View 1 (spheres, helix red, strand yellow):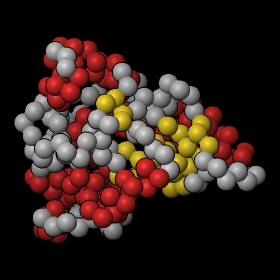
View 2 (cartoon, rainbow, N blue to C red):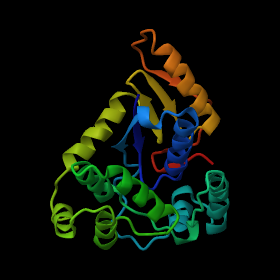
View 3 (cartoon, helix red, strand yellow):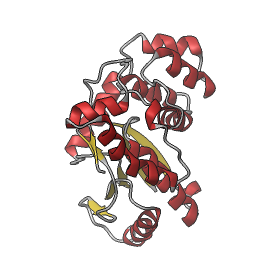
Length: 236
C-alpha cells in the first residue's frame, strides 16, 4: 500500500494527522506493508524567512483578532495534539517559511533518511518551538539524521530541489487538494484532514477490500471532522 501525504511543516493538523496515520497502520499491522511518501505543500509561500513574528501575533494579524483570541483559537488544536501525545508549545512558535524545510526533505530522500527528517522538522517546530527556516536549525536536523553538514549547507545555499517542491505543489492542485494534510492511497483513494485514528482504520479496511476490484476515480474516505489547514488558515 502506497500512501502519499501532502503536508506543510507549520500546519498543526499535519503532525496530528501523521501520528493518527501511524497509529492506524500499527493497529492493523500494516506498517511493514505500506510505503509512506511525504509530498510538499506550502500554506503561505510568502511568509518572510527567519521572521521574528510569533505564530500567535501572525494569527491575530491575519484574522484581525486580539492575541488572546488567537490563543483561544489554538487551544482546541493543542487539545487534539495531546490525544496523540504531542504537546504543542504554541507560545514558542514563530511564523516560518517552509520552502527550505521541504527542500531539505527532498535532499534527505536521496540518502533514505526523509522519514527521520520529516519527523524531526515537525517535532522541532511544534514541540520545541524551533525556527525551521534558519540554516542553523536545518543543518542541525540534517546532521542528526546522518547527513553531511557541509553538503547540507551547500544545498541550502543553492536552488536545488526547488523544482521538486514546486512539482509536488502543482500535483496537489491537479488532483484537487484544497487543504492539508491530504492522504492519497494507491492513487485510488483519498483521506482529507487529520481524521481520527478510528476513521483511518475503517478507511484502510475499506481500501483493502475495494482493492480487490477496480475503481479508477479518486474516492475521498473518512469523516467530515478531520481538521486541516488551507490558504494559511486552520479549522478550529
